[in-house]
Amino acid sequence: MLKDKTLELTTGKEINNNKRELKIDLIKAFLVLGMIFSHSLDFFINRTYISNIVGNFLNLVSFPGFLFVFGYNSYNAYIKNEKRDINRKIVKKIIKLILCYYISGYIYIFLVNENYNYIDYIKILFFLKPAGYSEFLLTFALIYLLVLLCRKQLRIISEKDIYMIICIIISIVFILIEPIKKEIPFSYLFLKTNIMSFPLLPYFNIFIIGMYFAKNKPIFNSKVCIILYGMLCYYVIMSSEHLAIRYPVNIAYISGSYVFIYIYYYIFDFIENKFKNKKLLTKIAFIRKK
Image (cartoon, rainbow, N blue to C red):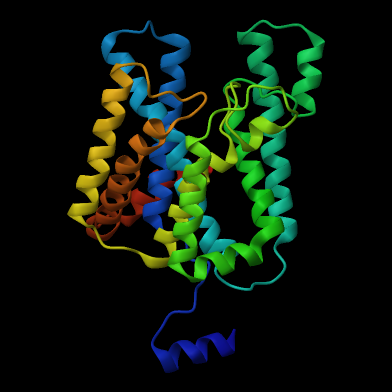
């Protein structure tokens, strides 16, 4: 502690590698509220033209947004520095996510689907099939496992932007390939299949983008925003023809989310820097914990 304080005094820099970034917590809080509202539309609201547009938007941005935040926070918390042993902490997070997955998944198939076939319960228990409205929890648990096992490799990737770009390109290739049609155990966790899921490899580019933003803190670029808006237009066109699909995910669907992630980042960065009432922002950001 004394050493850190001395270094702070001599360099003029605050030593706090674990400091949370309020804008990222605000993004996550906003995404949590959006996801709750989206699921409420699915379960409790009679769909209209407007509710369909709102629901499609929230579905488009929710999982990619969470994955971006996940990549951002994982870089800061686990990847960028050699730290004390944090394996136990990551394992606890994996266990919590899996327990949440079981609780959410079983409640969904029992109360909503009214499925009483014990074979399906066993398949969900051993990850042979995903449970509805809970699939994303498995993907997050899988990413934590990846961070646990490959932290050193992810650090090497994060050290050079070209490595991250290569990983993004590889992930996009997995978006473009045709979905697996055969039933292969656990394949839905990693690759595109006809099962409703969020496979790791096609979505991994967004995790890497989150790492990139955490490392480089890029300033807003209007040209980049215009390009991403063009991708959104492509999504809208494909969606109007029912060709932008979520399951199995295609390039139109994922690329359509990029512009919202980009805008969210800079909107909440602006709010964090310009909004004077930090206590209120911190209270709003508290939602991301719950």
